[in-house]
Image 1 (tube, rainbow, N blue to C red):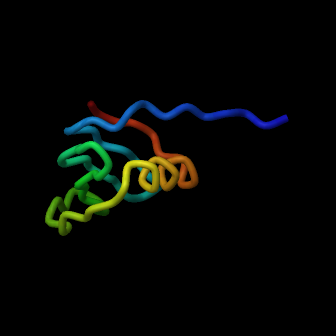
Image 2 (image 1 turned 90 degrees about the vertical axis):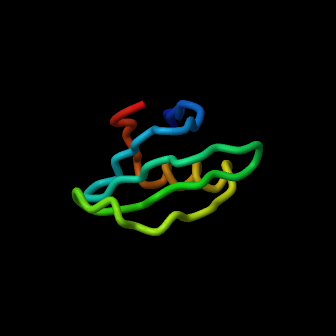
Length: 69
């Protein structure tokens, strides 16, 4: 039996934990999301751009946990 994992809608300011790294949502548009993907406390990662559906799929595959809204 497959268990569906529902992910909260992406919002500005969210922080997702992915194993030993974090992903911080910077800005959410209609179809695109600006985010930073970093390890540890270092927040100097470059800002990346991705489609909403692709980022949500990435979070599901890597079992992302919402840490902060």
